[in-house]
Length: 233
Image 1 (cartoon, one colour):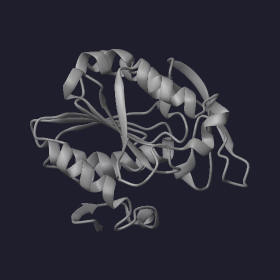
Image 2 (cartoon, one colour):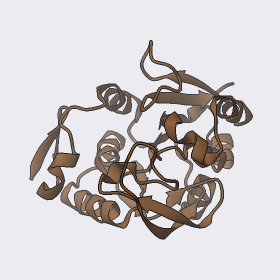
Image 3 (cartoon, one colour):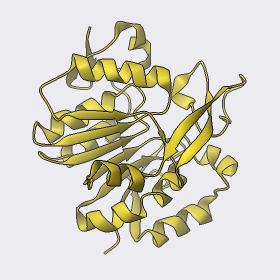
Image 4 (cartoon, one colour):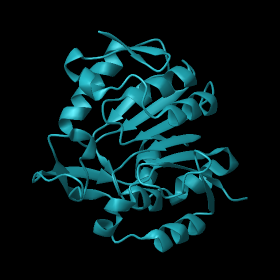
């Protein structure tokens, strides 16, 4: 069915319309629209149902490319249908894996609220998770396998954001000044990943990046806020 997301009309599976808000994350949507350019290679890390990947594909156009990374089998299946329903833009490649600091296999935690699925247990959901083993890979491994260098990365990985960024050292170096990363921050989840604010700041420096909040007046590591990372040079 056609479904409005901000000023886009996207064809979605009607069974998931309760999970696709019409107008949430306005600042992020506008940032994606003005930052992704024709011909860009985009990584959408933690793609969920693929809505942002589709928006990015429209911005990148037929000459661009989008690679979506999503570890939850159910979410990946829905995202794949959404990619099939919506053509005429950049091709979208779906990879069923989670982004991490090291590749291999890991336990993944799934909930009835699928947008909080993560590599560690959610801290703000009372229900016990279902657990399954999933593939995990670094962004460096993904880009090396596909022979791509992204210019834009959107990331929403429920607390594993700095593990995923640590696995992107080579990509950050190769992309240079052309790279923009926007990351949804989940500091409430960081303790399970051995992270805190000081470690997050140090990781940003080690990667040669500078960070600023997407929305002025909101803290850099605000819960469910977004940070924009770019090369410090």
